[in-house]
Length: 483
Ligand code: ADP
Ligand code: MG
Image (tube, rainbow, N blue to C red):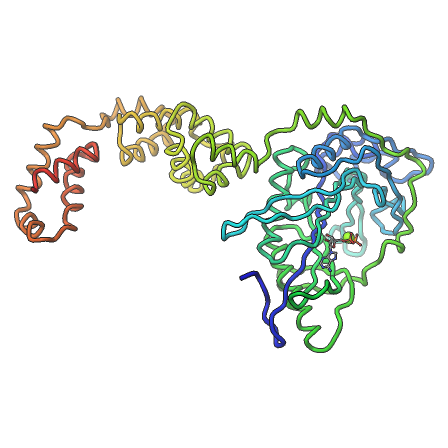
């Protein structure tokens, strides 16, 4: 059953389209040589162009163009070899020019699609309408002075990619999955760091509701939502609000709203302006942006493997589940780490190990794959020791703990602590015989039909052997001696 919200007049479908703003990773700004690095003392990364001095001419930064093309390719979208910049006019204190240079009628990237996966395992495609390049604005700060607002122009002129989706999203879950997917693709491509807390990735969330089968109704746009969770909450809160409006006999008006995370609700900011309110016109200071086919081809050829492709390859090449593959390709560093661990080993065992004990340890230590105290090659060696039966799975956990504590290699630890698995059947038979002799009453119960006691005997034998018995040999010996 698809997601729907229940109102007093029955079920409502939710319709969502996202406009994602992604700050481009590049050294310099879109049209000036000033640094695009985040932070820095206020107003230290500002050129005359960014400050809107009269007579200054913008010059396009080719690296920002390349980043937009890479992103377009990663979104499986059409690259427009000819695009154009337009002026979007509006007044705001942090916009010294009184206009933003953006792309309106002719964006650099056209239609594409991304795949999202939902919790029931189904895959859905969300259409990409376009991606265009534009300048970011500066930042107004209202908390620095008791009765003045101050402006930091460091961000003014930094390149942004606006990625617009089709209104294909139908639930908070889909909106969240879409955001995460976009972030993952951008990070794989190295075109945006995806850091929503610092604002380098943020979304305008367009929401409307309708009765199933109806045409789209009026939408509201919730501005600048800066976490995946808030995107999901904003969709739900706004949809519920609109349902109430419609059901009370009112009408939803097209407007721009803000999401207030503390109260879990959206509130009106201003009535939504339409394109004509901005008086867009072609930017007279820039020529149309014309891309060479070879430039695009070269970027395509140097694109890294994308997460969906990597995930399918992991399934095929390593025989691991689609689910596990999804976990392992979450970010490129984890995927690389896994491939090093699996190299030449039992790849499924490696996947279970990484997604299980290894991730649990990182979590516990507050570490990431980059700061992991255990290297991929040490984990690779450990998997080898399990596969060739030098140690069993139980002891591997102990060895791993010592690896975490000491940084020693697993081979060293096994030798030092004498943790080698016991495969000597005489030793195992002796241990089994002793346990059975010490528990005559349990043996009698087992023989009269209490099958569950089998596990008890195996456990006792393992314990007596300090966990080092070969599990299948121990099982066999217990079975043999009990029969
Ligand atoms: P604008 O640029 O004025 O914000 P667009 O037509 O470019 O308007 O649409 C912006 C976003 O709104 C897109 O992501 C689109 O998918 C979404 N959208 C359009 N119509 C609806 C609707 N009825 N309900 C929800 N989202 C919508
Ligand atoms: Mg918009």
